[in-house]
Image (cartoon, rainbow, N blue to C red; front, side, top):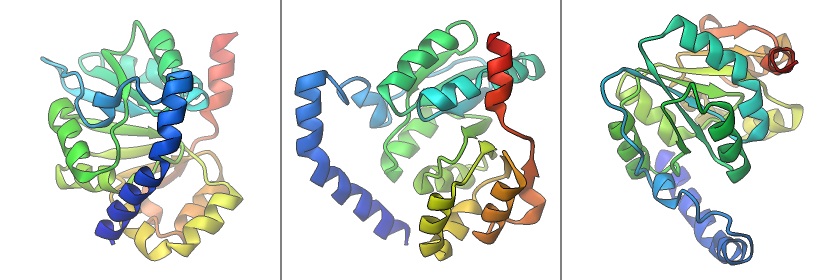
Length: 216
């Protein structure tokens, strides 16, 4: 199933190449960080690393109180932050300029690019904001015994419907997570129905509200 997923991911990128080229030429999108998206990331020397992954602006903003707590609890660890979008990258570089050792683009979810990235960063732990479930990345983390936590997790009704179609595969993906800290009991229930064990599920509210209070 992982092979089928990787093939579909590759085919999807091939189909979207014309769109990428148009956006790159017209707006400069997707060019920035291409090497990083292919797994060539800046190394972090001398400290164990905690890797925080945010998708875009919303997740980056919500992660602010989490980053403060991580830095307090693990002062001898280096924090690195990854994003997928250009806007998320710009915000992360600004918001975490004094707290993150490095900010970079998340690698494409091919096994070879993920392995390349993990070999360079060698994280002691990975924190994933909301619901970024990249199968090959999670599988490689598990193979390297790197604990991965889903933080501020949420699953919308629409996403839940889509996930139920591939529940048999998603169960294997969720098995790669060490724990999932969800926003609500509804989110916990949906993830449980998709195959996440109860002993890995927790509820802690929405970090977004903490971030808004921190910004006041």
